[in-house]
Amino acid sequence: MADRVYKLIAHNKKASHNYLFLETLQVGISLLGNEVKSIRLGRVNIRDSFARIINGELWLFNCHINPYDLAHRASKIEPVRNRKLLLHKRQLNKWLGKVQEKGLTIVPVKLYFSGQYVKLDIALAKAKKLHDKREAIKQKDIKRSLRQSQKRY
Image (cartoon, rainbow, N blue to C red; front, side, top):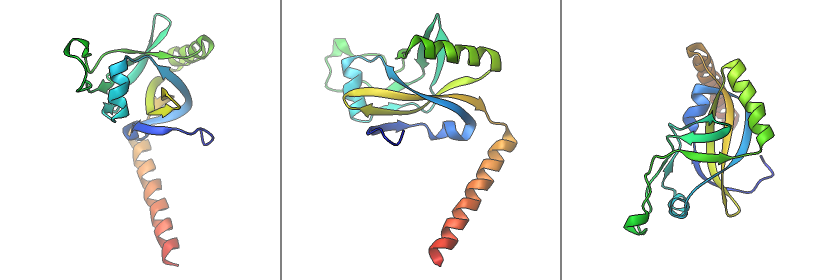
């Protein structure tokens, strides 16, 4: 992902705390014009959103995009609606098998502009247990203290 140039819009930091990411994938998202304008203003929240495979298609749920203020009243869209995610069929089938057989979930990680397109990074994730979360916090504290001690010397 280091070779891509993108403008980050939203990042789901809560997901990395609650889930262990096994695999990530860049997908497109089907949006309407007013939603894209609102996303350009940064008025989007993916914190509580998740993705599911329904009838052979990948859908994003609970993604909140505030309505664009300057849009015509008749064209205003519901802020929390299901949005279709765009990816290749073979990628979808590969993830479908993993989700069904291993009990994994699909979590959105970050939303960004790649050129003129809105892209979403999704991750195939496994839920962390409470002791895993504590271990991750402990490791983060150790790394922070090491960095601080290196700055002093």
